[in-house]
Image (tube, rainbow, N blue to C red; front, side, top):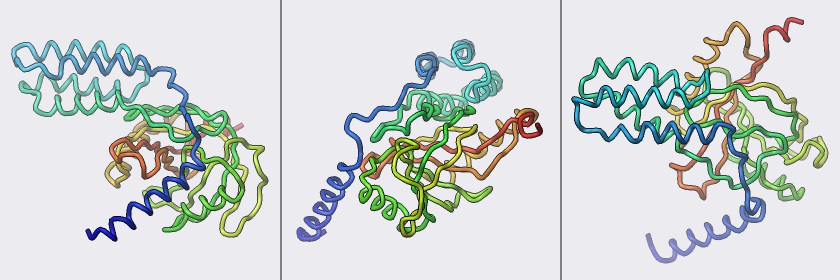
Length: 282
């Protein structure tokens, strides 16, 4: 790359950094998940054993570590269910050629902590741990919404700049049913009484209802494979809890990080809105 082009490139990056810095809050922090310490302890239990090299003791060591980790996780934990399946595989695979990589990936998931560049909207629940599945209750909120396209992010960005609205996390993308294609993108207002609903060119400020969402955490770059795995986790949860819950709308993807965060540190949530069947039938 020529020096002049390099200068233009870094100049553009600097300008973007100043622009984004003016809307991202200083000292942003996400609330801690209520089970965060248990997830960390479960990761520690597994991490102590995945490096075991003696195959004569590995089976019993892994089995005991998996049991200790499961005991630390929530009763209906998706990760605990995965660990139970891996425990069954330990005895069948003498060298644990498939089990050990899977356990190492779970350790990385359990230890992952999202980077907060902006605060959550008021009343939003903590982030779902990576690889976990849980149902969460959200309050009603106000959001600037536009059709998703190559310029959707910038339309929303210019809207909040013009209206002196602080950036929050996450950015919400409504997905087409059974696909990963975004239909709408939204920047969420910090409070539901902030600003006024209505149209602003191609952007519309809407008051959106709260409700229950089945959620799973994702780490790393956004990819079709990652979204497919996340969708499968949520579908597994829905199949297991189908007697009590039903789908109440299209899926959404929540993105929590800007391009200035390393891609392997990105955090996302894939969610599907649900309602209790008993409530829906009353």
